[in-house]
Image (cartoon, rainbow, N blue to C red; front, side):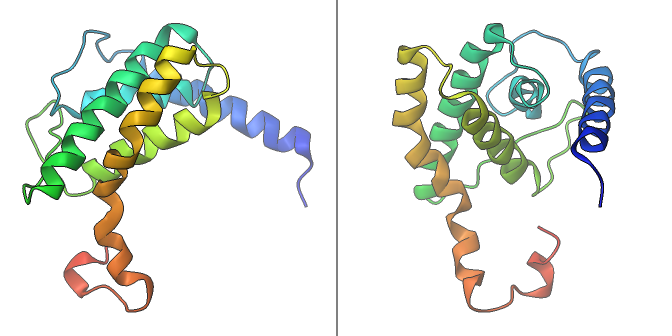
Length: 145
């Protein structure tokens, strides 16, 4: 069994690689349908930078709007910088924001925390279709997602 220090070293190496990968990505605010809205959340998973808290909150608000679209029957789409849409982008953006929020919510300033708290229930609507597969296997075209 690996010791905690081995896991710590592994995490540190992984965080450095993630920082390298995210570093070149523009810090400019991404459009609401851009996959780049997930970058601040991804960065918060590797470091606790309070300067990223407003961007995390903005990302949760974007997910809130996407959840409202999904509830209304529209399919929310996130697009990568090359202009491609993949089904996995929406759950990826949601996962990164939920993971980052759970990691830093106790340190968020109250107004930002409250904004996230208000937006999260609707944002979670994006994951509701997965509930259908709690008791049955998904069809082959949905397995990868």
